[in-house]
Image (cartoon, helix red, strand yellow):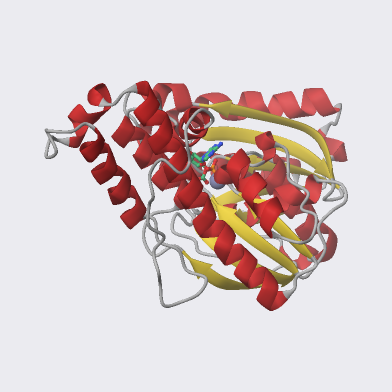
Amino acid sequence: MKILGIESSCDETAAAIVENGSTLLAQSVASSMDLHAAFGGVVPEIAARSHIEFITPVIKKVFAESGCNWGDIDGIAVTYGAGLSGSLLVGVLTARTLAIIKNKPLYAINHVEGHVYANFLVNPQPTFPLLSLIVSGGHSQLVYFRNHFDYDLLGQTMDDAIGEAFDKVAKIIGLPYPGGPSVAKAALDGNPHAFTFPIAKLDSPYNFSFSGLKTAVLRAAQAAVGSDYRLPSFELPGRLSAAQKKDLAASFQYTAIKTVVDKTLKAFNELQPASVVIAGGVAANQELRTQLSAAIPIAINYAPIDLCTDNGAMIATLGCIKAMHYAETADPYTLAIAPNLKM
Ligand code: KG4
Ligand code: ZN
């Protein structure tokens, strides 16, 4: 069973071919990230235009690299939500068109669910019941999977996603876009205990909140520059020393990661899953891997970094699982995008 996966929900245009839901034959990712850097965030129109430019080349590349031809492909899986409308449209229309002209089944994939399946490309594969911490630019969720497509949402963020908090903190203290990797890099040389930041206490044991933490970083940065306590935040970066930036980054990262690790441990103790996985762009964060492995008493097999951020391999993997076990769930060639799709 070989599935072509297509992903275009945000600023990465990606394709991959995966065999049997476990073997990555080839993948290609083109990013328009550099074009957004000047604006400090993804510009939807620029992202959509870039997808149009990159979508055919990334698909051609995975065929060339895998040595597959269309006769080898059993179906096409595509992200249909959640994401930016213009971006999703490019992937879905491409997948629909290819499915029609090549006469292949089409499988619509939920982007966030897809992130979890990057872990099924790791050997040994995770087993059910599976506790999944999903941490990306748009989502922070704890999900308990009894089996494929049979899951409960245990909790989620009440405000910002954790990746969004990394990106906003990077802006506050003046680190380059994209914020997650640059906060992580600055934190390497900082003291995680230089500042004590709060962890929000919420009614539900598995929900998260990051907006208070973000504001606490802003206030600490303002206090750190001294007399101009009320200066506007856009003046802050130039007044913070390199050492202050590193300490703020390290202290923020430590607290943000501790927030999600504490809740994951609580869910682990209560539900005793067979496996624990992390998924989404923030799963690339080394501090998360370190804190989580120290907290959870079973071994965690982490996916390689390039499978944590947006990619086509995770979409093709979930597409394979659908095609192998739930072929009847193939979608009509009229498949529409779902920008606000939930788990
Ligand atoms: O999953 P993803 O590529 O796109 C979404 O579906 O949102 O996640 C992107 C998010 C961004 O907020 C980015 O700053 C964050 O993941 N990120 C990181 C790291 N690498 C990417 N956050 C913390 N540490 C990292 N190493
Ligand atoms: Zn994503």
